[in-house]
Image (cartoon, rainbow, N blue to C red; front, side, top):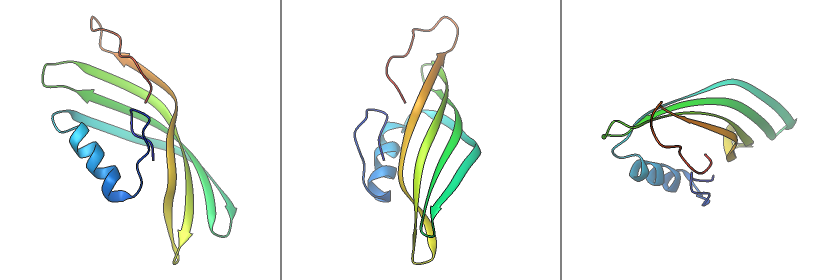
Length: 105
């Protein structure tokens, strides 16, 4: 899975560790909505989710984000698991009067 900086992470522990450190002082809420999931074989699937997120920093800055996540899934030992995930088409809307946020989700 790719981090906001575009670097790839592998495995749950690395993924959670990266975001736990990156978001330590930030209040954040994200919603994944309206999944479009297609089973491509008995053991694989793809999915596109709409995402909305809000981040608030201790200094009062806020960022409202919208994006899609494109996922692949794999059935392992009878359970579905996320194999890969990436953000696409990010839109970032800083609160009025705050500087534009650069980069992509």
